[in-house]
Every structure is written in structure tokens, then in C-alpha cells.
Amino acid sequence: MAHLLRSRVPTWPPPPRGPSGHTHQEHDTGQQCYDLLVIGGGSGGLACAKEAAQLGKKVAVVDYVEPSPRGTRWGLGGTCVNVGCIPKKLMHQAALLGGSLHDASHFGWEVAQPIRHDWRKMAEAVQNYVKSLNWGHRVQLQDRKVKYFNFKASFVNKHTVCGVSKGGKETLLSAEHIVIATGGRPRYPTHIEGALEYGITSDDIFWLKESPGRTLVVGASYVALECAGFLTGLGLDATVMMRSVPLRAFDQQMASLVTNHMASHGTRFLRGCIPLKVERLSDGQLQVTWVDLASDRKDTGTFDTVLWAVVFPVRGLPALSLVSCP
Image (cartoon, rainbow, N blue to C red; front, side):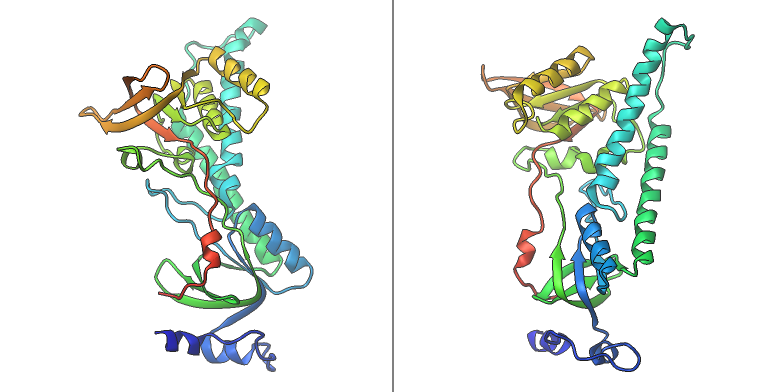
């Protein structure tokens, strides 16, 4: 296998281009050569690729989304476009509109009560908008003559990657420079029984077809508070469970103002608590067992959804080690 792989992978730089505009390697082996290859189609990767193309370089972007444990997947654009800033701001805006409707009667507006929110209609609108951005990013790459590959990439050597399509077809791509811009993904606390089997993360919350219902958000990160905040604003029962202080990396006076504001608007907080296990009951609800670290007392609660929003790990760095194609 190693001999066959070496026979397919040329050394860098590639040979001069022939009359057809292709290198002899491209013609003979299907090898595709670029000045710059970007692995990752998020904000950083796309900006890097478009800037290089604008400077006259031959550029390609390789992007692949590993489905979440719940099977959620999305298109080009990375976390911000698909499961971060954009859908979060849209759902936050939906929550703000709900608050305005509740206040409208004080300013003379006659609004039918009770005010109800249709999660399915909102989710469909958000997802359609995100898909339009996915397409827009592809058009921008095409306009700048940047080649886009929906491949899962692995390194063959320091100038070559092997891309595998959804159908299993392999393609070799080589470049003088390769940028790793794979971004981050949420993680599950796999040491907690039932966390992976029954929980979701921010990779899933924005793509749910149905309302998450009564939700336990585990974590004290800004992702945890943002999600709990818009869920409360949409009229859902949201509880935040945190081990220590909220927004640890932020100014703690501001962090207190944020959590106090959320609590005054209906978000519940379980402070100094950590979950021990998650179980599915016969009625489909999730029973969470946790322990209060101060008293060492265990307690339980039932929820429709458990959202893990702990700190994100950095991804992609292990890819710096060279690996062979399958």
C-alpha cells in the first residue's frame, strides 16, 4: 500500500504546465495541483481562500461536516453560519419580538392573549435563511475561481491531501501551501451516563423540527446562556446547571448582571451542581440526576431536552501528523 501511495503522490513543486494548461501529473494521474489548499469552509477558511484568489493564486477549499451524534449536518459556511451566530441571532430576535408583544398592551396595542409561539414555523424560516447563505458562499467561491470540494480530507504528505467524497471516491489534491481551518465542535461529557445517548448540543438545537420543550442547559459558557436566554424568551421552561461561576473568562460584574437579568425573566439556575446521569423514562421524558457540590446532596428532575454547552475543544491540530489514505 505504501509503495502504491508513493507512486500516486508526486513531489512538490509540480512539473511545468503543458499546452493544455494542465500539468503532466494532472493529465497522467488525476492529481490536482494548487497554490493554496484550505481545509475547512468556515469564516476563517473562506476568508483566507477568497483573499488568496484575489491575489491571483490558484485556490481550492475542502469542506466536510461530520454529522453530529444526533445526525445533524449542514452546508458550507462553518459554525457561525450554520449552528452559531446567524441562527442564534435570528432565534434571539424571535424571543425579543415575543417580549415586545407582551409589552404592547401597555402602549395601546390590542394583542390577543395568550401569545403563542410556533417553533416549527420559526425553525423552518431560520433553516431556509441559513441554506440561502450556504448557497451564497458557494457562489462567492465560484465567482473568485476558487474550487470547492465537499470532501473529508486527510494528509498524505506535507503538500498533498486525500479527499474522500460521500460516495467513497478518493481524490488527491496537492498544494504548495495548505491551511488547516477546521474550527471547533461542541463536545459531550462522555463520562456521564446517558449524555451522548440522550443529549444534544448547539450543533442540533438550531435544526430541531419540533420545540425542545422543557430544557436543561448544562454549562456556564456564553453558548449555554445564549441558548437558555432565547429559549426562555420563546416561552419555554429553561434551566441552566453550572458547576461554578458563569462566563468565567468574562468580567464577573457583567456576568452577574447577565444571569440576574435572565433570572428575572424566568430562566432558572442550578448553581454549584454537576449532572451524574441521564435516563429516558417510559413516557419519553429525560430524568437527570445531579449532585449539589456544597451539600453533597443528590437530586433529580425531568426534562424534554438536555443541551450540553460545555467548553469547546480545539479541533484539527492532530491532522498536522501525516497519515495515509485509507
